[in-house]
Length: 251
Image 1: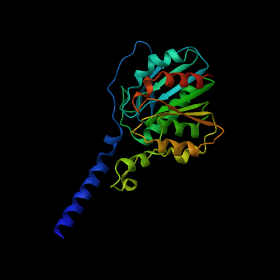
Image 2: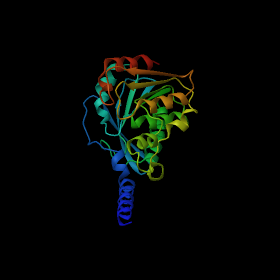
Image 3: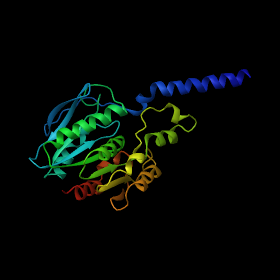
Image 4: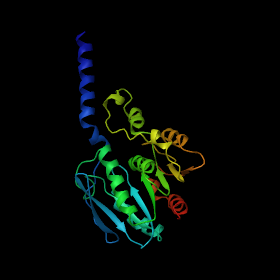
C-alpha cells in the first residue's frame, strides 16, 4: 500500500507540475530582433503593445502572418518580401515575443489577432492570412470570425489538445490543458480558399492531426499539399514551399 501511495503521490505531483508549467511547454518567446527591410508598427491591444513588422508595397492587398511557438517571425521578412511584390506584408510578434509586451495565452493571442486584422483591414481591400504551426490555430480562428480572403495553414493541427494527448499519453491532458486551440471545431465555419502545407517528415505534429483538420473543411475550398523531404522546421527552407505560397496567394 505504501508503494501505491507513493506512486499515486508522484503521479499527482507530475500532473500538478504539468498544469502549473503548461504555458512554458507551449510558448517559447523569442528575443527582439531587428530588420532593415521592414518598418515597425506598434499596435495597442487589450493590455499589451504588439510589435508588428510591415513591408509596404502600396497595395490594396495584404498578407498577415502568424508564426510558430518558437519562431522569430522576422526570419520570414526577406523571403516574403521577395515572394509577394504586389501585397503589403504584416508579421505579428505574439505577446511576449520579439518586442511585444505581455504574456502569451490562447485568449490573448486570438483577441490580438482580431484587433490586428481590424486595423489592417481598414487600409486594405483584401487580407489573406498565413499561419504556421501554433499560428495555424490563430489563423483558423481569425478566418472563422472575420472576412479573410484566403488562408494558408503550414504544418497545422486539429487541436493543441490532441497533439498534447499524443505527446503526454499517460496524463489527463483534457483536464489539465487550458490553451486548447481547437481548430477542428472552428473549421466548418470557414468557406474561403484554403491551402494546407504539410511536411513529409513532421514529427512534431503527426500527419493524422493535419488530415483530421482537412476532413473538417469544405472539400470544395481546401487543397492539401505535402512538401517532400522536409520536417516541421525545415519546410520553410524548401523551394517547393516557396512556390506553393506564391502560387496560392496571388490576389
